[in-house]
Image 1 (spheres, rainbow, N blue to C red):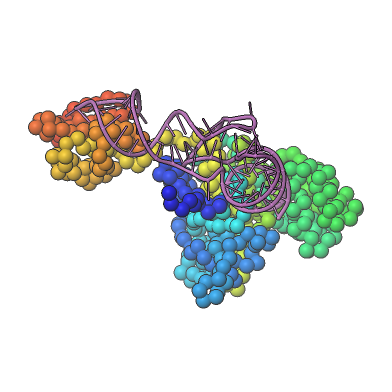
Image 2: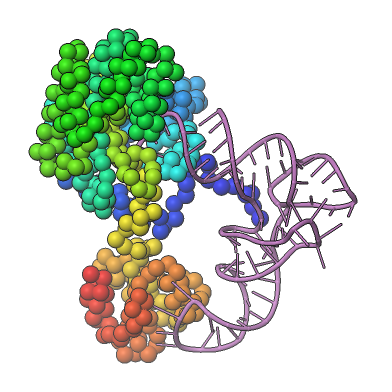
Length: 437
RNA sequence: GUGAGUGUAGCUCAAUGGCAGAGCAUCGGACUGUGGAUCCGAAUGUUGGGGGUUCAAGUCCCCUCACUCACCCCA
């Protein structure tokens, strides 16, 4: 036996059966992206350290970094948003504006793997740059909605909030700007640990009893989207920055309605926070209740990020779809409308080596007509070849021996139905095509 | 980074502290113009690694590593 190794922790091999499912999901996602007017780009796996550093807050520790042979500090991309912002800055003059792109590529995080979490995973991103209005954010939400519906998801929530709320809350409590992320972090846990839990968190972070009491009012906000936002208005109306927040969320909700996203899907959730440093406005996250898994999409507005790379502030918003989590859920709920393990339609069986030339030309003929065809190249007898087709998941077999050659006929065996028909040689292509429909 | 659970053949799993096994998969043969068959045969292990207790350890103890799950955080 050889050296015993497996794939690196948190990274996976994909068999054909798995790849066919992945390609199906990616195909649907990509189809919707194009349908909404987004065009593809790709960026390199490795970015310079200066591109990556300082963009991810606490999460920066999860970056894969190393030195190249010229001693330059570099890292594997952590998401697609930061490389995209660098891309925009580098191609500013070539790009139309607004610019809408999609990008489906792996990213890497030095995380400890668990269910639905990997060190190498694909993200499917759409972003719109150059549009200040929340109409762009709303369109992003609609794309997320359409993708999930098309994939067969029945019950999910697209949660929205705005980063601006945390500025307002910081003002409201009279705390310094540096406390903002602590407020966000504590609030974000509300659903998990309840009001008392959040109060304890705040205490742990060193907030005064008076401020914790003030936060309790905020944390008690509930009801429909408009009930929640109006409840916040009552408390925060006179706090500087509130009207910016209020208008932003309202605009977004209105646009979302105009884009015909069902109102029950869009949830304004003032307790949604997102860890990444670069968000400036609306933030979004999609969750499903079962199976239990973290968010399946995440995104938001980042109006200052491109400016870091170009000295020109260009508004931008977008979202990422977590391919692996979607696939984890789809696997668990068996959401695929097919059950195929191969792209191959036809196996041409070889019984009699003397007929090989004939069989090669039949194979090539089918291939030229666009039918995915395999000529059997093993050394099993016909029984073994049938088993091969079954194992591989090929549904059609062409079986031809000397008799058929003489008669100018071929047998088509349909394995799923366990039937076999004999047809004239010249009808082969039409017969196969009809049956493939 | 923290915690819990699990590590035995390629895979799924057995084996009261007492000879390391089965099923599936693999390979060879029988059968030879048709469904995952059947029959005969074969190969496969440092029981994750190291140490300890014992007459005797896959089994008990310690250390370590790997995997899985959960927490943190996240897609």
